[in-house]
Length: 141
Image (cartoon, rainbow, N blue to C red; front, side, top):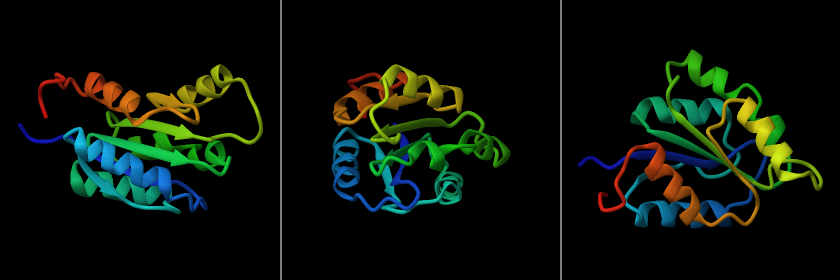
């Protein structure tokens, strides 16, 4: 079976690379094909990479607190580019200040993201969700 393709990266002006590397290795070890765009990635770069690679999901990380601004309009741009059904995940320290996570999650879901993760979420949680959302049995790779 062909491996599912993920686009990962850190959005906006964020340069936090460590978590991105951890996710890359965890997703690869779980059997996904991972295209890592690195840090300071624009919405357009995620979308171009997803189109070029026929990706199954885009995983957006943000740690510097401006993820909400950086992610506005992302789903609409995906739809306009012909990526209407692509999975969009976002996680990290995605808003400024301490805000109740359920409120943050609801805002990102309203923006069209399929899954929203708070700081400290393990890669295994996202892997489990990817397998469920992409219809992969845990025995498959």
